[in-house]
Image (cartoon, rainbow, N blue to C red; front, side, top):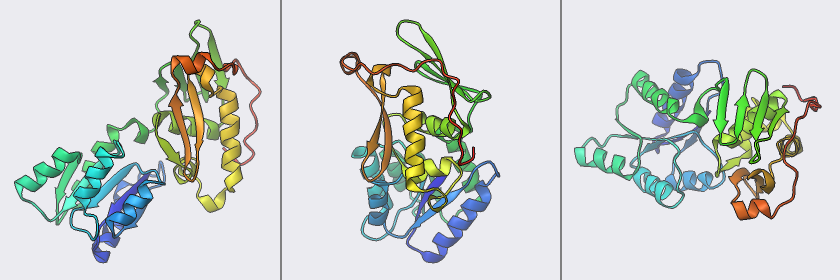
Length: 264
């Protein structure tokens, strides 16, 4: 899980990052808290990176938390969960931030257990942040976690079962859960349980190539997996006209898994 934390007080920022990593860690996944002390710096990062949650202070230099939130909702059209964390407790301030698009508002000084509880509550509402259920469906695609496979139902009713390696399954699920949005390389690597320095850049590209081939993520299947230059990848739906114009084969029954030598 990747969390961006914005606060211009270095002491408060350090404490908040430490508290969140400790309070949210269940041992099931890595908690990465990325600190920012300026709103503009975070905005630049949001253009390139993917985060599961933002914790924003209001009063920060150059671009305050509410201005950043307004940009995020109005111009980026992002639905990433946002918690405002501020010493401003006036009713009009709280109502204003919630009206712009904040998912929650916590007044400083905050209580660590309460803040973590509020974050966990938000996470349970976000499919992209929850642990993989045994079965998850995305239109014609059904993810079967116990058997590490994906079932696809074509328009003519034909059913296909595509077996995946553990890493391919986790990559596919992350992309489907963020349908229509660019997902950063760092985010995908974290979903694989590795950090950038632990996996060569081309290794991730190879995983994506095999995944695109196995699932037939081209226009003919109604979905297209595209490379987003300088950021990562985006899985997007294809309109009927685009799909019919494309002759790429649909995914079929496969049992010839490619061994994940990097370790699943």
